[in-house]
Image 1: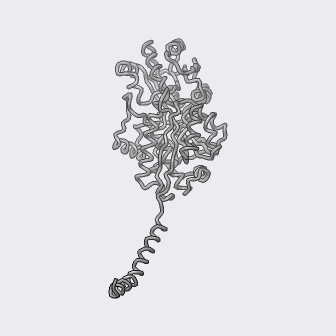
Image 2 (image 1 turned 135 degrees about the vertical axis):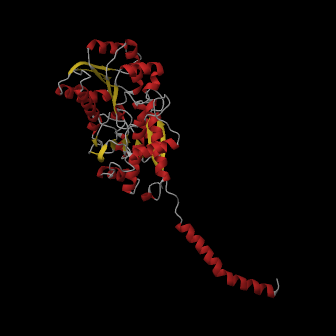
Image 3 (image 1 turned 30 degrees about the vertical axis):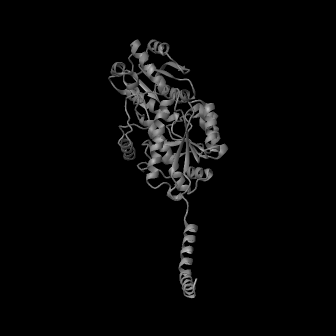
Length: 405
């Protein structure tokens, strides 16, 4: 290389050194200041998606996932740099033993930050204690049992109407029917699932019926699963009751209605819990449904229904329609009550993550305990039955809820 080339090269390096240094400095600064996307907030959904109670998971699951999508599309959890919500499903088959193992896998392997569950009253006694053990918030969209509050858990909360609220709804509507001139309501029959779900409601309902001057002529629990309700319907027919109050899990409702139809028993029915949701006609079939529903007045105490003119719920329904999710009486339709409560569980967690500005279970639980300020009419309080706001007592019992018929 000649002297001219060497001189030119030296001048070029001397002149370009500040520029190159500045570029390298900028690159280094960019690497140092760029922040990775926050890890997703994972919510476990241990629910029955197969087996006898699969219809509940089939409705809760899409509600949970739609709510997560809506939160993410709105920017995620802003207090946590836009962290997105992910849903981790686990099939419990409605078996309490399976539920516990599914929850432990979700916590230890999937590293979930919270649980949307548990499903049933039986599971609450066997699995809900894991909430306090792992200091991980549980929010159940379906649990109603009063007995679950005796566990005095600090990290588990329910969204559904309580057993007391369901009982008061049945009682108030029975009194309403009693006051009408077209119906004679003096004698009441009770037929219900003999597990904690049914007994917890009936234990509150019976004293109320007696106080209202109504005669209880049949108190008939049953042990599921039942394949033929003929014996129970014959007992109902012999009782001479003017009205039937009943609490079944939905899989039993259609069988019971078919037995009433076959035996020609016509009586007003007031259901509670999952008895007569909007899918009942589809599960009965057109012929049976047309007879049964024409000959029997059927009412149900629920928390969420399509007929409620409540703006936050209607916005959720509009979003569901855009996703081509349907509700109604066909066998494959979703049940809005459980769909809506599942969505509410996710919105509740989203509000808690935002309020806590943390994903730590203790901090999130403390935010829930203090109160999330989700008031009736707020976009994130899509269930219409909490007035004036969503709130719990110290053991997770929901307060200020109003059942609907």
